Image (tube, rainbow, N blue to C red; front, side):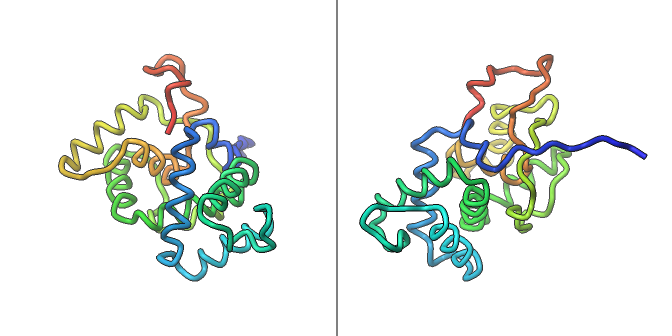
Length: 186
């Protein structure tokens, strides 16, 4: 019997790899397109808002104006893994075309993945081990080779890679590392 244990990083560990402005943009997108989410996802996020967010002057933080809500959600996103997971799952559900395209690129590169529509909030977190020989620049290039006319930011591609793969580039094999870890951000 194999006694190997798999260690996971909590979902909010992604904050080490996200630029503040991009994190705010992701959260803003969720609140701007909140009604486009499924009823279950809206309900889950609203539960998280009640538990983890406090916007001064509002008993119900979900009713705060967008800029205040984004600021409060950014704080919760940095601290609470379950909140982070719900926001990222919602973001992936709002970007189904990108999700499928990134999934196809990763499958073509032989990454082991759950189907794209799987609710990843049920997972315990991110695997800290990145795929050997891969980095964001290589994956960006592969994406645009397969999707030459598709307009998307590399930040969006990278976030979708992280979310679909359930991996953060935290533990990269030094021999294969082609970029500084500090540059591996989304």
